[in-house]
Amino acid sequence: MFDFISFGIADCIDILLFAIILYYLYRLLRGTAAIRIFWTIAILYILWKVLSAMHFNLVSGVVGQILSVGIVAIIIVFQPEIRKFLLMIGNARILTMFRFRKKEDMLYMPEINAVVRACRRMSNSKTGALIVFEKKTPLDECIATGEKLDAIVSRELIENIFFKNSPLHDGALIIRNHRIAAARCILPVSDREDISTDLGLRHRSAIGVTVLSDAVVVVVSEQTGSISLCRGGDITHGISPVVLETMLKDIFVNKKEPVSTEKVEENAHE
Image (cartoon, rainbow, N blue to C red; front, side, top):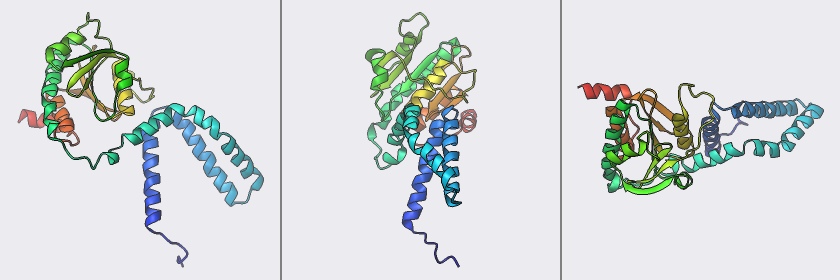
C-alpha cells in the first residue's frame, strides 16, 4: 500500500538539517518582534502551498508573487538577524567538536580565581561590573571601543577598574589570552522582549554579546550586588561566588556543561 513511499539516508539528513536551521532560527528570534514577522511569512508560505495543491491558481498566484517580490524586503528587514544567524552558525559547537583539549586549559585557573575573588568583594560592596571572557570568537570590534590595557588579570586591578570613581568603570572589561585586553568597552545590547524589566543595561549587554559570540560574561549588579553568569544568550541569576567558580571551571578547565546551581550549593555545604 505504501510502496510508493521511499525514505533513505538523504531524506534523514535533509530533515535533520532543516531541524537544525529551525532550532537556530528560534534561538535567534525568540523574544524579539521579528518572530512575529517570521511566523507571518511561514503562514503565507504554507497557505501558498495549500492553495497550489487545491488548484486555486489565481489566489495562489497572487500569494506566490507577494512572497517572491517580498524576498528583497525580507532581507532588508531581517538584515541584523541574518548577520546574527550566520555568526551563530559559525560559533556552533559542531564546528569545534573535533578540536582536542589543550594542556593550556589549566592556565585559566589564575584568572578564574582573580575574577571570583573580585566578584565576591564587589558583590558585598554593590559595585557594578561587567567581565567578558573571550573564547574562539574574536571580539575585536568590542575591544576597539574601549581602552586597551594588556594587563595581568588580578583581583586588585579588576576592583580598581570598576571602582565607581574610576574613569574605566563604565563599560565592559574583556579578558583575552589570559590577560585583560581592554576596559570601558561597549557591547551590543540585546533587544529581546522576554528579558525581565528588572535587568539593566549590563545584563542586556551580557546577553547581546553572548548571542553574537561564544563569550562567557560575568555580571555584578550595582543595585543588588547579585552575581550572574551569561553564555549562549542564557543568563543565570543570583549565584554565589562558589557557584561562579565551579561554573567557570566547568566551562574553561573541565570543558563540560556547568552543573545546576542547586547541585553546586549542595556540594559546597557538604
